[in-house]
Length: 200
View (cartoon, rainbow, N blue to C red):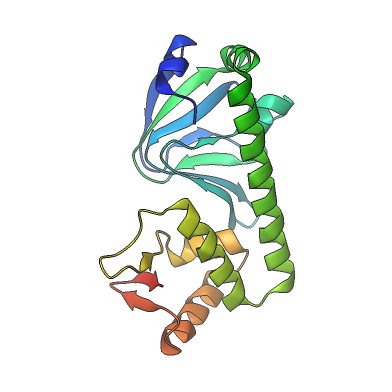
């Protein structure tokens, strides 16, 4: 996360997006650095038959879309607001100046991008080698680290995604996710309350 004061110093503006607004499309040129103030954003690819694959989820203080910005290539995915969201937007030329003059931020960003690559690699490995239940459990473990505030009063983690979003993130059909989650509930590996998945 880049401090708001520093973003302002380099000319960042605050922008709002409504639920389902597209922040940028796959194939667009990367002209801005984006950082969430509040809300959630998903990065998706859409297949020719209309299926979505979620490449990443981002929340408060997260930045997204940096590889295309730094690598000077077109966005490989579309960014969509999952709910009303408020973001910092900094023009590319100012973002590069900021990095040039703040090595610590540049280094932090490098570490962050390496961590995302590691998570992507693990996700691809899960899709290749694991059965649906293990893929769901592994992904929920990632969500626990990403959304530490999603804990219920009885100390269980509340999965902040729909069954469709779980399917989109794990490369499975939604029907497979629904069947697997139901079986896991019957085996007491998780709890479902009002449609939400709770897990220890």
